[in-house]
Every structure is written in C-alpha cells, then in structure tokens.
Amino acid sequence: MHLNPVSGRWLPDASRLQRHVNAAIAYNVWHYYQATADTGFLTSYGGELMLEIARFWASAATYNHALDRYEIRGVMGPDEYHQAYPGGPPGIDNNAYTNIMAVWCVCRAFEVLEVLPPAAARELRDRIGLTRTELDHWGEVSRKMRVCFHDGVISQFEGFDDLAELDWDHYRQRYGDISRLDRILEAEGDTTDRYKLTKQADVMMLFYLLSAEELSTILQRLGYGYDTELIPATIAYYGPRTAHGSTLSRVVHAWIHARANRSESWRLFCEALHSDVNDIQGGTTAEGIHLGAMAGTIDLLQRCYTGLELTHDLLRLNPVVPDELAPMEFAVRYRTHLVHLRFDRDVTTVRMDNDEGGPITVEFAGVRHELAPGHTLTLG
Image (cartoon, rainbow, N blue to C red; front, side, top):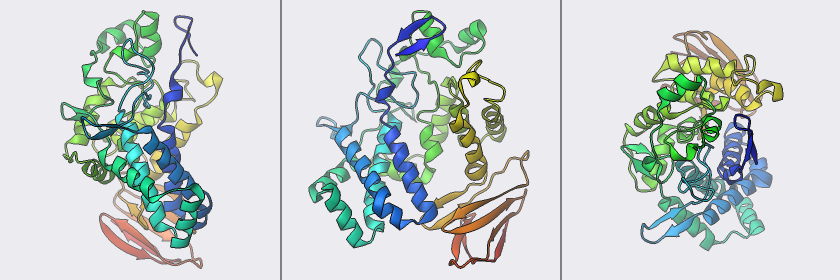
C-alpha cells in the first residue's frame, strides 16, 4: 500500500510488477566485466547471474500466434504512473523498455557463453541445467519480441496512444508544482492511468542505457528496422509529457539532451545536483537523501559529458563537455590500469600510469590509438 498525503488515503501499490529491475542487474554485471575483463568473476558469479536473468525473461515471455511475436504482459515500467489500464487489474502489456532490455539481456547471455573459456562455459551450462533446446528458445524470443510504435515513436506500452491527453497548463496554473500528478489526480477522484503522461523516464531509459547503435541493432534483430529519426522523435514526444516526479528522471533527461540540447541538459543536471540540498520535492530530504540521483550526477560527469564508453575491449571517448565545466579532470580504473583523463575545450588528454600491464586501445572521434603504460595521448 502507498499513502497519498494529499488525499490522506492508502492506495494499492503495484510496484512489485517492475520486472525490469532484473535487467538493471544484468546491465551492471556486464558493464563491470567490460571495465575489468574479470573473467574469474564472470566464471564464478557474473555469468550465472546473466544466464539466469536471461532464463527469467524467456520464461516471462508468452507467444502470440496471431502476431508471431513474444509478449511480456502484466508488468509496470519505470514510469510508475501507469499501474494498470483504466479500470483494469494491475499491470500493463509490452512495456517497450522492459521488452527491449529483455532482448538485450538474452543477447548478452549468449555473449557470456562466447567470452568464457570453453571448459568454463560448459561447466556453467551443466551447473544450471541449460540445454541446447532452451538456448534455441532464447534465440527465438530474442528475435521475435514485440515492441509497439505509434506516430513514428516507440510506444511506452501497448495502448499508450489510446490514452487521453492531459491539460498540463490547467494543472500547472492550479497547483504550481505538478511533479506528483499521481497524488493530485487521485485526490480529485481521477488517476494517471488514464493519461499520456509519465512520472519519470521510461522509454527514455533506453537512450540512457543503450547507444543508438545498440538500440538499432536490437530493433533490426527484431525485424522492425531503424530510422535515424526514431530517437529524436521519441524524445520530442515524451519530453513534454514527463512530470519528473523523481529526481532520477532529471539525470536521464540531462543525459539524453547532452548533445542535441546542451542548455537543457545543463539545467536538468543542476536540478538533479541540487535536488536534496534544496529539497526540490518539498519535504523528501527529511526522509533521506536520494543516493541513486547523487550517483547519477557523478555518472553524468564521468560518462555522459565525456562520451566515455567501455565496450569490445575499447575505451571510447566522444566528449561534449559543457562550457560551465571545462576543464574537467579525473581518473578511472580500466583493465587494472589507472587512466587519467583531462577534458579541455578543444583537447582531450589520456595518460596511463607506468605499471606492469599491457597497452589499451583508446578510440577518439572514430580513430583508434594504442596507449602503453607510462605514456600520454593528446587528442583533439
């Protein structure tokens, strides 16, 4: 149950249906491996986590014979303002973030079996009873998962486009702060389930976690094709329909606006940075700080504004550092090395401590460079 302090009523809370939390675990495991190349961890712990999460997603998907697609029904997406269809039981169907990240998890599970030494991969499969038949089923799910679209954008979930539009101006004029529309509407005898709105980033989370290349690869794998206008059109659609009822939402939106709308990204970053200091949600800081949002602001500095990406044995940089931050300097631990990064307005410097490890590959503006311990790259 969840208390609405505006109406004073206790309400059913269906947040237990947020199955996408499983994808967050797999995402973190995989990116830890990308940063460390810790095969021992992957062999002993991480690989089993990845495979069992993929197994969960395959079991959660049901086959729709009429569409020749797999679907995931009865969940809640990251949004949290849509617990159900209007007047229906808890849960919505084919949440895009959930379904696409399920496919991502299954694809990474296959990759785990490829990167592990053959003997370790066999032992892991035997330990969890993973058969060839089950792997074939995973492959089919990862190629036939359903994703819904409307008006040239990704639908947050099946039927999102059938919902009503909210009169945002009316509610802003009446209440001022409308970040918690769920409480406001419930006190009026209404529900957010009826409207095309979101509490926080939902579909947008895809652009936060996945590069355009990763997303296009998944959609093409599913047979949907990919239009370069899909991401900007989807951002333009959901941006004005987001209430930012969580400080985490500002982190995500600051990230996705970093290149196309730098001033908006900086504004949202500052709001997220000051969220607990200034108690922008009106009383939540007294109940405890939002550590996830605080970590998210650091992540924006380290990975978003620097374009830092660790993938396929590359340390990739594509900086777009706001003028307010340049210069920016910090160190990261990558593949046992301590790598020092400095970002000036027009020059990026990458320096590696003099240690006993081997060289690493740094990609900048699409060009790959080898960096040996004790050496420095000056890029621009």
